[in-house]
Length: 509
Image (cartoon, rainbow, N blue to C red; front, side, top):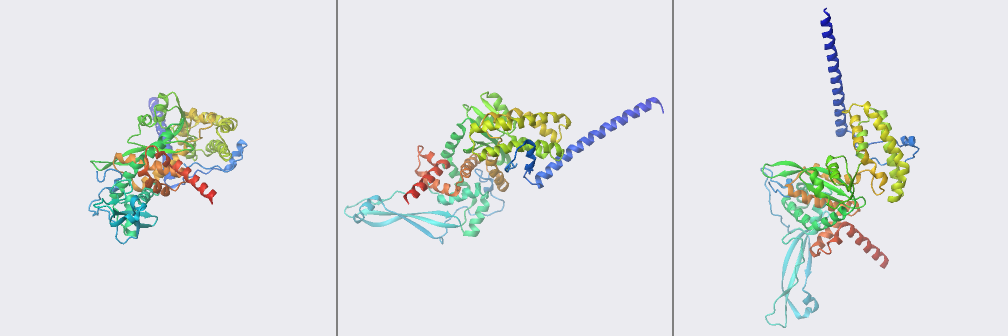
């Protein structure tokens, strides 16, 4: 064989070896992606960790809580007509329901009943609901004329104010539909079926859609009050979640986003936007906002912070930890070492929560206990980076951690800042469950109504308030409220008033 042929053969062998190595690398990365997908679909969502591992740091954990990771084109796409489906659009009050009758006499008659004679009444009816029971609320406004006055004009009590004239749904029914949809995640069509099959009351889903639109409109002043309180501070957590909405005209759905801003220890506000662009962050946060914005690593937040030098971006250790947890099977020993550092950091936070530590104590404990752990972790991650393929799960986890490392240290020197963004993530979870059931909302305008109602029920959840009791009471009182008194109806102030009333009652007893 000629020397040239040997050289050519060796070159081909080297080329083949390079090709084999490239395919092996590609196969390795693809297997990681498949394994991660299988775990995501079929695996446990919890991230277990042996607390004894914290002894590496001389820390004894109590119990670390693992961070889990066009039709009726207005409010809900479910209200669209299904082909061939017949539907009675008019909601009716069945005649066989028990009746609760309310008789209202004019004040003049109440003051001097012997001076008037009864000549008739005007009757209006609403459909009301208590859990498991429908009832008909009949309001009878009796009319009178003065006995001693010739050609006297009849007197009648004014009709009590309603959320909307002509709406047959009373506050109890409206509150129940809202809670079933936004707390229990029941689509309107399923509520329609429940009412009809269990109670013999047919309420078309289109009616429910219009009623929820009206409820959201009436609750908007409360929503704006909550929003002003959350955005008026100097520390905000923020996240976003996709939701499909109906695009009128072609019958297809588009992806919109609920942007969520939260105040730890306070409320959470949902905002609807049809995009995920960085401009949305500018539109949501007020121009005068100065302080700390805590988020995940989505680029829109970084872009916003770079333009607003008075804003400091704080990172989320839970997001960083989660990526290392997902890469644990690639290199169990390395993952164990890294995750043990995160466990130690969360052990410090658990101890601070148990002691109900304020910002000053939190800052002091973090400086003495958490800072050394985080610094050691940072050095280790930098040393490990050259040993992993950039596209491997561990390589991606390391690259992500290093890219956000400065923002992860903000919580060490700001006692009011949380270690992660989980509080606002937890507020998003109910909407994630809901969209699995009802798939998409109606036209883009429906997103705003959805955001209002999610904000109200999440505010109730954070305070342990029964959303059904709250909405029933507030929807009853709203028609009599003014711009000067509506702040009294926020879940926070409503709960305070209820608590004060119970204390007064107990004291009087």
